[in-house]
Image (cartoon, rainbow, N blue to C red; front, side, top):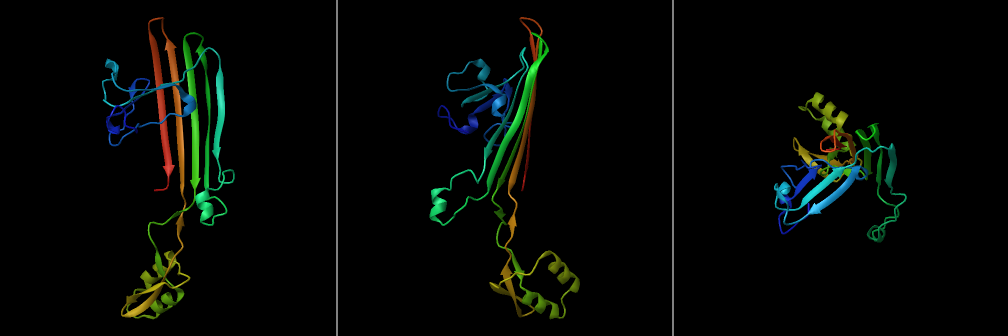
Length: 233
């Protein structure tokens, strides 16, 4: 997060409807709130009132939407797509004629209204955010014997035929030799395997609000907020 009032970002305080939303091990909040579920957002700096005694940095306050006497809802989709975006000038100068994959949807829906008019209200929102990016290279080069390398290994005495068969099963032969490695004093030709991994991040967020106006002086509020992330590790 940002530095507010000359304090470190770790000194910021994040709250949802006055409830602690601070991740203790790193700077920032634990939960994120979809934009359409935010009724109010404020950032306070310096000279806080007593209710903001948690931290000396910025006070990031989010107030969630609730239901009203009228049923209201929304369905939305925010889209970024490699086929719709212009090609970056830096990529063009390097000879790229198309964008790398970057396809993102942020789609969701919300509904709120009365359970009992003027007394009891509900609001709920669900958002799904899939993001697919260009394939990620493996964490370093992967070398494998070429076809000639495997033939040389198969002709050697003293090697485990079982282990060699397993190696062939899970490590395909490289097409082009780039270097050699010695096995029993014999140079075995190796090449680089063109391995690429999928690269995606799917985020799920949903929340429910319940508001009960018991009287002019008493109110009961319930909030449930959930985030889930699915990605390649």
